[in-house]
Amino acid sequence: MFSTVLEQGGISNLDSNRKPVIAVTMATSRQGTGVVNELSKTNKYQIRALTRNVKSSKAIELGKLKNVELVRGDLIDPESLNRAFDGVDIIFGNTTPTKGWKILRGSIVRSYEMEQGFNLINQVKFAYEKGDLNHFIFSSISKAKDPLRNEPAPGHFTSKWDIEDYIDKLDLKKITTVLRPVSYFENFENKIPGYTISKKLFPGIVGKNFKWQTIAVEDIGQWVRGVLSKPDKYKNQSINIAGEELTGLEMALTLQRLVSSEGLHTKYLMIPRIAIKLLENDIGVMADWIERTGYGADMNKLKNIQKELNIVPTSLKDWLKAKLENKKKIRNTWSRQWKSSQLDLQWDKY
Image: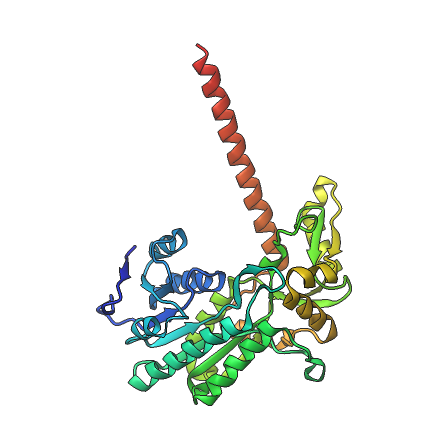
């Protein structure tokens, strides 16, 4: 495995065979990590993993992957993007609205994401004009199933869509693929007391009978790998992407089937809307939006695209099964460590 950290003074391609160079913004985020992992496995690209802190534990783990180089890059610092994008062929860009939780504000700050978006797109434009960049993949968010019932949309949705508009304004659509994921499975792992996912409880933000499109965040890596395999076809395209479309009750039933051998019953529990809006108002607006219109991924059309691009979407069942198995491994490790410590204590008595 070969990796390096590129300093601010300049960037050069690591592979003399000239694999296409792709810059991945926010590489240590859930999306970014999934993209880096997936592209690393292909052995087709030289990956510049952009992160604000190349010495963080997450960055160090990414740096151990094949064909990955760590690059200092911050979406709030345009000059760092300028350096990181120098000579790249492809850019994967994603932004975040979260800026630390504050009372009466929550953690979602639309202006923070818009600043990132404008910086990102301006530097994409600059890289394209220099002549190297030929493909930009932007991670947005799914549009509505019913456009006539789209308003009011949550602020962290409209910020993504406004960044899409800016891509169009700068005449970059011709080289751009927009991927629009729906809600992540990972969002079920909230830390709200009394509403944390368990074998007996499946928490959600919408009513139990509303259809809710979801996706595993790591699957975005598969989508990036897929569209890069057919770039000419998927440039100037926007795709709402999802893995599942289930009601809250169906989600809870999926988990219950996995734990039924233990004699357990899994209940779906909707987090009270007023509590959501007090903690994070924009998520409450999102829950209203999902119930009113819902995400607009065409599940039948996606099956054909997934087959074409060799994408195997993660099912909620498989995602939950993996989580349960991981927790079991952790418990077994703790148990072995505890037993070992007891043996050590007994030995010390003699």
